[in-house]
Length: 162
Image (cartoon, rainbow, N blue to C red; front, side, top):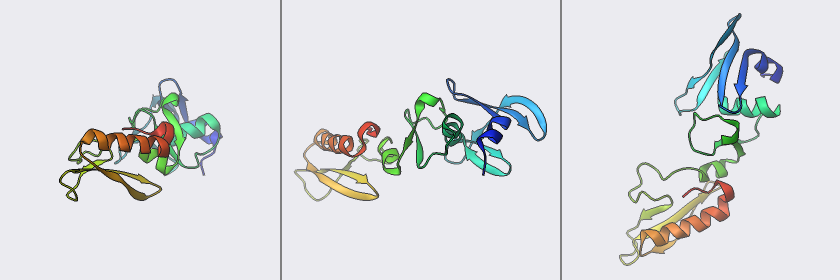
């Protein structure tokens, strides 16, 4: 397990810019940018054969403790590791802070077209704690969106994103 002392020996972190720099790499003193994107778009580094995401390392570096759950990027930019942009989150909270899916036919988070009612063709749905819940069927996208936004605010609090 990586210790805070070891981390601060090999890497430096600028909390204002979110930039990480190698101090010591492969037995040499260096000063160069650290981190590259993983397959999910998060920046990561490899220390002693183990890959670490830099957003999680930032929490460890700043607090001295590993994050219990997930680390959320407030602005949704997975490469923005400024300290003010990071916050501890549960999986449910982190899911609340996402945009509408790219394959959404309505383009509105939490709203889909439904064939159940011709007079109310838009359904609002929310997923919390791994369970999907219908919020009802609506005549307009705006009505369904309003229902989703109200439920999201209640379920996700400050993490709610419409």
